[in-house]
Amino acid sequence: MEFYNRSEERTGVQIHAAYSPSVDVQCDFVMVYGIDDEMPEKVREWKEKGYIVHLMTGVAWGKYVDFLSGEFDGREHWDEGQVTYDGKEKSHGHQVPYMVPSVAFANYLTQKIKVAIDAGVEAVHLEEPEFWVDAGYSAAFKREWQTFYNEPWQDPKLSADAQFRASKLKSYLYKRTLDRLCSELKEYARVTYNKSVRFYVPTHSLVNYSQWRIVSPEASLIDLPTIDGYIAQIWTGTSRTENVYEGVLKERTFETAFLEYGVMQELTRGTGRRMWFLHDPIEDNARHTWEDYRTNYYKTVCASLFHYDVHHLNTRPIF
Image (cartoon, rainbow, N blue to C red; front, side, top):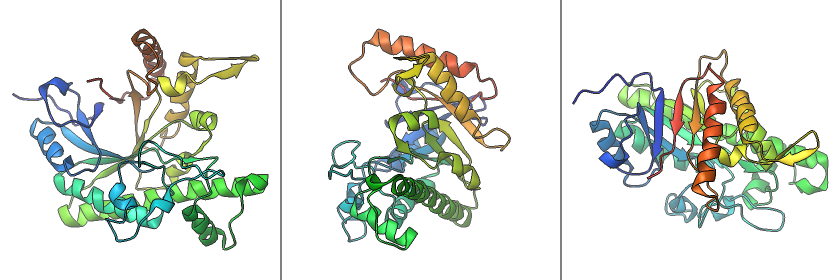
């Protein structure tokens, strides 16, 4: 069977599963999710079916227990999770903390992603560099503060200045991590295989990060020449977040999605970098009905189509 030319990579799908006809949606590229032991085989199977294969993995969270437990480098890293003032860990699941992106964590991800480059991926997506505003109390963050500011850590709750400085450091740490990862891995691909591997950052909009109180280096990533573009992670879960207009607080999914996609579009305008718009059929909240998912999904898709300068689309399938 001959496949049409997928080289423009207009449509892609994020998927954790190995190849199966039941999950083959005939898009242009496939993002194999995760850096577990099965990843190289999944890459091989999708490539054999004619797909351009990317890798996606979290840069703030993921199933990285071998790093946290010390199996990777002989030192435990449980103190590198994001922690709030009352000692609670910011978590994305069991043993999946949001990370303070240390140099050791960057080294871990680098070594894991090299395996994907060895397997033949064409691009890597480093998902969601996010640091919660109410975090900043872990031992790792305090160490980073001392290194960055050359002074003892300050409690971000104590003053507006301390909160500003904590947020500035949080943004810097993820920018540093992305720069280290992309620079070293691009060099590895060039030296080892004489090939170019592209790097993208899937990220929520700054509108949503403001609403959800998350610090992101998003806007400043334009300064990193090793970043090739973004995925605008806008979906019902972000766009249905209630907001105030003319004194009324309510959901405005279509209007908010239109604004979110528009903000993200400006990150690549005039830069020559790539932007994909995410279309996600359902959100993470399992309490809604299928009719609710469908109605709001259509609203986000319609909102994205008003931004005609972006014509590359990414989705998460339902299987």
